[in-house]
Amino acid sequence: MERSLCAITVFVITCYNNCMDIKQVLINSLDESQAYLTKALSELTEEDITWSPKAGSNSILFILWHLARVEDGWVNRVLLRSQEIYESEGWQEKLGTPAKESGFQYTAEQLQSWPVPQVDILQRYATAARQETMAFISSLDARKLSEVARPGHKYDTVEAILSHLVTEIALHVGQIDYLRGMIQGLRP
Figure 1: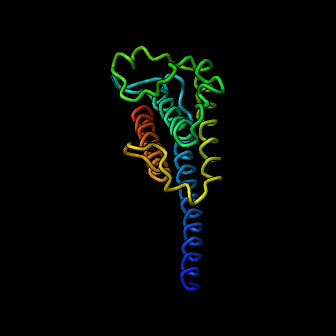
Figure 2: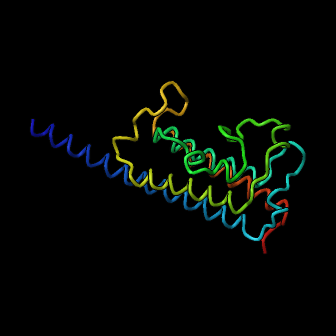
C-alpha cells in the first residue's frame, strides 16, 4: 500500500511539473509568435495592411482579424465556455465586422464584401484576445489538460485545443510575414 501511494504521489508531482512545463512552452510559443507578428506589422502602411495579392486572397488585416477571432473563440467560447470578448466587450461594434463569424472558409465574395476595420482598433482587440489566452494558460491546472472540452470533435481535449491554437497562430503569423515580404521585400 505504501509503495502504491508513493508511486501515485510521484505520478501526481510529475503531472504537475509537466503541466508547468507545458504551460511555459505554450506561453513561450505565443510570445515568440507575437514577436514575429509585431516585427511583420512594423513599418507597414494602412495600404500595405489592406493589400491582397489578387481578388479572393486574404490581406494582412483580414488574417489578423481571423487570427484574433479564432483565438477568442477557442479560449473563451470553447475552453472557458463563456461569451467571446468580441461580443461581451463590444469589439464587433467597434470593428464593424460580422457577428458570429471568424472568416473561416470565406468565399471570394465574402472577402470582397468584408468591412475593413480600423487597424488600431483591430490590434487592440487582438491584444485583448491574447490577454485572455495568457490568463487561461497561466491559471491552467494539470488535471484540466486531458479534460474533454468538445466531445465528438477532432480537437476535443484542452491539450489538443491549445496545441492546435498555437499551431494555427504560428501559421497565420507566417502568412502575414509572407505577405509583408511580398510588399516590402527582404529586410536589410
